[in-house]
Length: 249
Image (cartoon, rainbow, N blue to C red; front, side, top):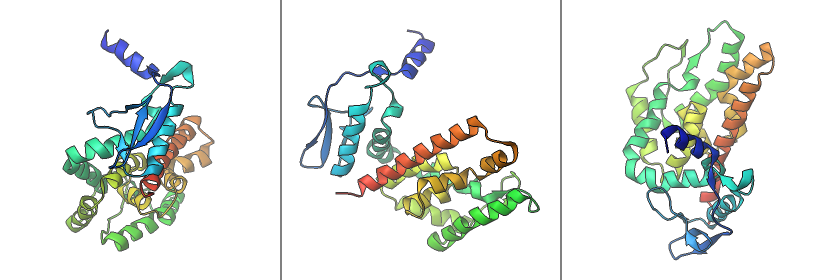
């Protein structure tokens, strides 16, 4: 099969091959099984978590996957499984790299780049973004500089060190959630706010898409933008739901 054919097949999905997804206590947590066989992640790690609530949710998404669309399922049908896979395989194997990739967002955080100070957009950015930077400064002792325009600005070394300590102390579950939320929001600050339960996903996405929403208010609704915002809400909501479930016994 050619590479193009493989790509088309992957996008179309894989055939559902199981009838029943279930949760089985195994002494060290709760394993998800399909027709009595363990689900294994790409590196062959069993899909097993400590939270029964999370395990039940994983089984529910496997039970639902592929029941529509002609019995085909795709990775996007299994968002919680994807995040758990990151927690169980990617984070332990690449923790330092994950921390550094998240920390890089502190150098280009969306909230730090503003429109010209005379514009209505700049006023909205100050009203909605500055409180989050103030929260980050107070909560983590990590002040971030603000600039007009898109030219890169250098953030204080002390701020990077403070945020690195925060990420180094994060649990695998928190890092897995951040790995979804931070790229989606374009902001390490907003991602940390999600982990700290400071706002709901809809509020954080609205904050991250302030520029786009202001554009639509001026020029009219754009379905491409509204679809993108809806997709971001789903991504960030998946990360928030994963965290909430993982905290339950």
